[in-house]
Figure 1 (cartoon, rainbow over the protein chains, first blue to last red):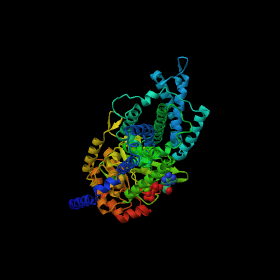
Figure 2 (cartoon, each protein chain N blue to C red; figure 1 turned 180 degrees about the vertical axis):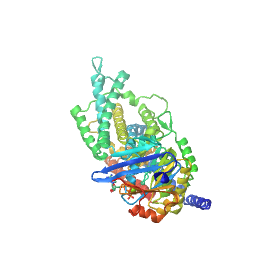
Figure 3 (tube, each protein chain N blue to C red; figure 1 turned 90 degrees about the horizontal axis):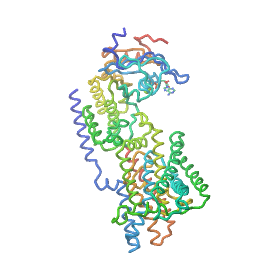
Amino acid sequence: MSETTKALDAQVAADAAAAEEARPSRLRQLVATPIMATLAFLAVLLLAFSILAPGKFGTTSNLTLLAQNVAILTVASVGTTFVIATAGIDLSIPSGIILGEVFAAQALMMISAGDGKAIDVPADQTRAGYVLAALAGALVAGLVIGAVNGVLVAYMRIPPMLATLGTLGAGLGVALLIRKGVNVATYALNPVATGTLIPGVPGLTNLVLIGLIVVVIGYVALHHSVFGRHTLAIGSSEEAARRVGLRVERHLLKVYVLGGLANGFAGFLSLAYFSTTSVGGHTTDNLQAITAVALGGTSLFGGVATILGTLIGVWIPAVLQNGFIIIGVNPYWQMIAVGIVLVLAVWSDQLRRRSQNRR
Amino acid sequence: MSESVGGQGVPALEARSIVKSFGTVRALRGASFQAYPGEVTALVGDNGAGKSTLIKVLSGVYSPDEGEVLVDGRPVSIPTPQAASALGIETVYQDLALAPDLDAASNVFLGRELRRFKVLHDQREMRKRTAASFAELGVGLVQDLRVPVASFSGGQRQSVAIARAAMWAEHVIIMDEPTAALGVIQTAKVLELIHSVRERGLAVVFISHNLPQVIEVADRIEVMRLGARVARFRRGEAGVERLIASISGAYANEEVAR
Ligand SMILES: Nc1ncnc2c1ncn2[C@@H]1O[C@H](COP(=O)(O)OP(=O)(O)OP(=O)(O)O)[C@@H](O)[C@H]1O
Ligand SMILES: [Mg+2]
């Protein structure tokens, strides 16, 4: 026995040495990391637009505007990172956001303020109570649509793509019905977006601050909490998760609810920032969010996800949009570019998976 | 007679006259089985004999139609895999059931994460304990513990699955064909690992079609045929030919009530 053991140990040592040698070069490793590739792509875009539109793109005011626009999409993208981590998908992001806006607005319409309603108060006369009521309305909208998604996917075993396509359509219809197709404006929530709780830092409006806080919470929840670990495990192998006793259905429901809440919250922020609901808007927010997540290095096949990647990826669609407008390219090109980038990101994910599974 | 082929003391895990049907298929027809602490018990039998069905009953995947399961001599019910875990029974399934994108430590602790502040996991500590248990079990993992198990070789993945079971099993480890897909070196490693788990005083249950290997490793061999046990042997009592005879029905040393 001891001789066999010795021979085995020698073999193991040799294997280790071989593995050491076979390790890919630093550079190749770096390029192979999707976050680095996306970061490089982002840098190239920023540089290109700065050169093409000198004194217009790279200005503090434009970058601040960009950060604001990115912040709302970031909130939805962080939520959808969890959904994609389970090997799911959430196409209902636009309806979550719009219903969030609409419910927030409806909540403001129900509150009396002076002779009128809270929805009509100017920004400087708003109250914390109005803001909280609107927030609650938006979160209820997100909760409902997320719970419906979760029940459909986890318990009724509807493929996520179709379940959330259904709630995308139905949710948009509900929003149009409630609003009778007409948008409503409000300035009551403005301070949430445009105020500066931490003054002195350029670009750090409340909206951007909130986006960053959501990223931090998402980061801890995905990478350091047991909840996040189980999310990744289910995305990696549902059967493995089941065999160790994870309650897969219940967990999936929670993840879709989380995604829905993020969308509802994004709707609240959107209403605060744009001062109006936008039924009929946000149509490509699912495309943009999913692209952001995929670009960041989260695998659409589940099991691998990164919040920091999402934080970087979310800038690509926004920079393309903003840059195209500034250099005078028809912004519709942005949709085409984002579509192409999404497919490329998923393709490279697939290549990565294949080379990993070749062993 | 049963004393001569039984093990030492009270069985850690015992099945008595288990009946299990799937529709009209009677997979188990009064199957009995015993595994003793500190012993390797091999379960052999032809394809379809009911081995996997029996161990699935014992690990909480199926509930039996009739019959009794006993742990340390006490009758128990094992309705779910978690119930088996709670009784100290861990199973290495043939398909391993690992999450390929998670690293070894995350897999070993999946569903039983060490926690900080109630909701966070303590990855550093889990990694440390996994490394310690791998070292203890003699698992030669060349990759570091941070890479996903998808990049491991088949043998290394097998080792992770076995190490996970070994880490949590307090009484019994059940392994369904643990060496079927392995090369020579890795097979030897797994067999070594089985020895070290046995040394810890656990009952090891081991399903294999490789009869020379079974004869080498097992302290006891139980033979199943058509859903019931037909023969039992202690180490050294049966060679390959006698095992084949039992498996094919030409030899039996146990009465089967049908
Ligand atoms: N879930 C099931 N549904 C229907 N029949 C089943 C099921 N599981 C097992 N069986 C049947 O029960 C019988 C015993 O199967 P089992 O898998 O236990 O055999 P085995 O001894 O493990 O065989 P092998 O050596 O091929 O793995 C077979 O006839 C099989 O077809
Ligand atoms: Mg079997």
